[in-house]
Image (cartoon, rainbow, N blue to C red; front, top):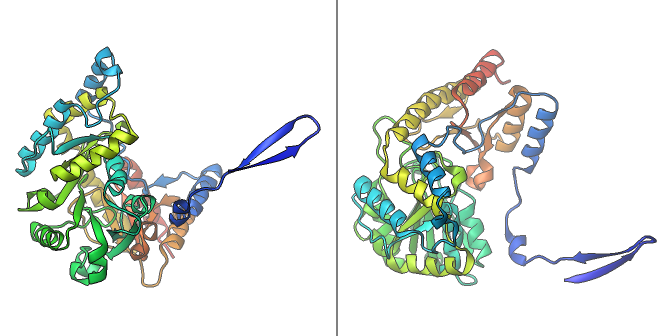
Length: 404
């Protein structure tokens, strides 16, 4: 840090030159900055922008969860520092939910940790397992935190391409042996963001075998398991025999119970991995607000009809988004799960350019696939997280003035 003195007539002003870490230089550029600028410009010009890019549920948190939070906030017991690992009652609720939903048994005391949203745990797990130069196997396209957290921990992300021809599943055998030998972590996410692809138990069995052979910790991100359609039931990675020996699974109340702003999630699995993540947490944060954990208990143990109602709404929106992609002349498979539609662009079309044209021509925002990685190029992601009437309006606009 270097101080520069700039003398002015009225006062001496000291400015500080701050040299940030090389890790920040390694983070990819924010590819959506140009699109965000275009969105703000359109709004300033009075355009009625329909934002189908954001993956943030628009439906409210169910009333019984809110009521529990209101009651808990008034209780001074929960006003003090929370435990690092989370309230045992919340961890018990999460473990019970997993056993009822997936048949997976976890010890709440040693195999479950409460998280301040699952993103917190995903971002911190590389700090527990990666030394400088170690490799994390990261899907591409993917939620950017997997690669970015690896970089911030001093590790090296190795991209596992998710290709349509392979059902957007990584080809494990295509990973070079020298990369496998350096890899300490593997990130996976099914049902998948952004592709909406799903994985079956056979694929997870192959992952478990691969992880055992190469001594790799599997970090499966599973926040979309309950947003599923047409009778599909997403499995947990931990259901597979031997998975808990080599893996952990992150889950969140954000998508299932419309609680994105509440920042409450959890991670389950390998006792050793949970302990290591716990050591990171004790040195970084003070745990989740216990009133929020009480609301989380109400979500996990209370009536689940609210989840079914959300899925019913998403199913109608899915139908409309598929109408929209048809009107745009794009190809898209009806997703079995998540609240995203992953649409293929015409050959040679750049996703950022397409999204800018869509905004300019129709006032509709989509997420360019390249923002999720180089193998996302040639696709856009549309989210079901706008009111149904707004998606109907998007379909109407495009139907009246088809793209050129």
